[in-house]
Amino acid sequence: PVLARFALSDAAVTPVGGGHINRSWKVVPRSAFRGRAQHAAAKAFLLQRINPEVFPDGKLVLQNVAAVCDHLLASASRVGLDHLERRVMQVVRAPGGEAGILGDDGAWWRILRYIDDAVAFQRAESPGMAYEAGRAYGVFQRLLADYDGPMLGETIPGFHDTRLRLERLREAVSRDVSGRATEVASEVRFA
Image 1 (cartoon, rainbow, N blue to C red):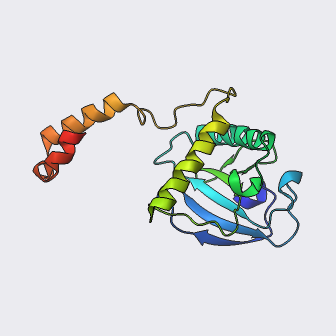
Image 2 (image 1 turned 90 degrees about the horizontal axis):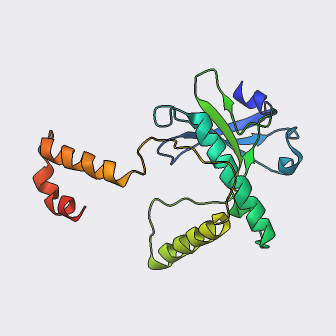
């Protein structure tokens, strides 16, 4: 039912592994995609279920991601970057223009253009790979530097609050409910 609401009901769907938070599926249309024209040439899409246990306001997550991706795509086009379909995540809007839909299961769902032959790594396997990751992050920052779109919402309250995180670490160390604090004493001192 979710795919039908994105005009993708006639498609082959296979799970995509590797994610830690959201569940994902590759969606390959068997017939022409009837959605927005800019996605008509896409060979495949990525369907994601936003995990409501991690993101209780999945709609806000979708709105934030769509706003950032729209800005990145416009910025990348403006500076003449090539292969935009590989460089910028592209959100496929639901028929009403929303960045996703609320499913019958109570979770928010989104569809992105699938990036063929993309590979995800959990960690850098060489200094060169770390350099390229840093360089890509620098490009991301440069393209996002002039973002003045809608205010982005806080999707996980306190997630980026360093003081709060350090206070929670101090509390956890003092409680030491699992009896492991002495094993990580040097890491705690460093933090």
